[in-house]
Amino acid sequence: MKYGEDDAAFDNVPEGIYPAMLTNATLDETGDVAILTCCYAVANGAQEGRALWQRFRFNDKSMKFLRWQLGILHVWRELSTSDSDEVAARKAADLMFAKVDKLKVSLKVSHREYNGKTYEDVIIDDVLKDETYIPNEVPVITNAPIMDTKEEIPF
Image (cartoon, one colour):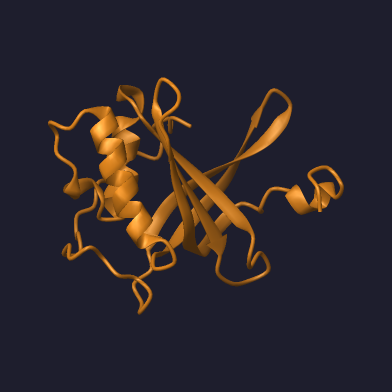
């Protein structure tokens, strides 16, 4: 099917929390800012198999969001505060590449309007701990970084 042939195939996933598997991760370093894109597939329920994407921008504006989201995935503690944005992006990407088809998470999907279109905002709610979750030899974080829900998330 080609994009546009069946617009229903590209409808947004309804708002909610979904179990999902990390199925792909890519790092784009061609622009001004490195962007790590993670693709997840909804694991079960009415939306099973649907793809959800999350993009991490490695710049000063997004650092709090990055610490929060990558902290939940046990990736942030592998990065050094002295790393440049580019080095941090590469290290984070390598750690995420290792988790493809192994990492199950719960994703929170919400919608926002921009220029008359509805977009999905996807954030990691938690890591689902079962036989498919294989941490990089990192202990479970009991005090993962918290982000104030009233704060604007830099999408």
